[in-house]
Length: 426
Image (cartoon, rainbow, N blue to C red; front, side):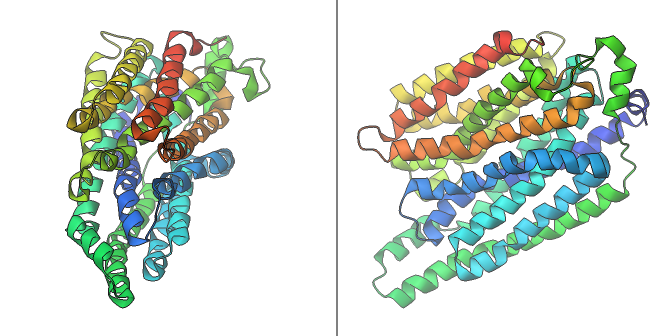
């Protein structure tokens, strides 16, 4: 089926199906904000950087699996690839069962890595799909609609999981710390770790059912080679032989790296940061939802404004400037004000993926799948930048506030550069 036929038929149906997938992305991805404090307590971790291995294990899988995902998609097509990604995610959820029974942190990390593998395949398929099924000028608007699905799920998932696994968390933390008898302490930790089993079994079943639904759906394939032939000389890929001949794509991959790192720091890192300011676990377990609520507002604004009132690259530029301002305010304030500034970074981050992704794959033609995979590899920023923050925060001469500033400022400065000139095809 050609891209032209795809765009003219079943558009609403396609948007709905991909919207469901983006809801799943958000639900699974933003559970990490709850898992960081939960696993630090349940597995007896001593340092923040150890707890932040949760984000490392989850996001680093994108770096290793993005290119293989593009090759898998060439064999399976987009629809079968999405279904396979959902099944892999279900397997990752099931790994949590033996991990909880053994209270083994490395096994939890393995489950998170497998979930990331499935999401890597799923995202490599769905992001270019939603970008291509309509005009490239409004791609940011469509991805913002997907972002609303993603962030509504992201708001709900930490609230649901924290209610289950971190119920009375502060009291349990006090009991564990004050327990002098090892048997009592072990029993408390085992009971706490076991709380994740039922939620992750339910998620595995839901993911399996969705995989079956996607495989049997009428979701059409898209043919990126046919798109290039239809565009003729208008396609940037005409006469090019390598993905490395698209500077705007390569610069876009680095922009995705910095964006995802900043997003994870604002969404998942807010729990660690707020704990350093003296907030109790019963309070911080909800802070990820505040960041995602701010992102939801940003997505709504982008849908209303792009492209009618503002271009996606200008919206990206203003978002980067807002990120710089809020990061500086986080450093120069304290307490609830600093936490509020981190949460408001969600507003600054909201349009970054929707704007960067279509700008970076613009004109790739037959290189769209491999180009998408390269951008997905940039998600590894969510693995590496929180680790940098965790390492710096542990240094007595740095601390959490300075570590946050050092980690975040380069992210927004680079994204500002990309929004000004880095996105332009050459």
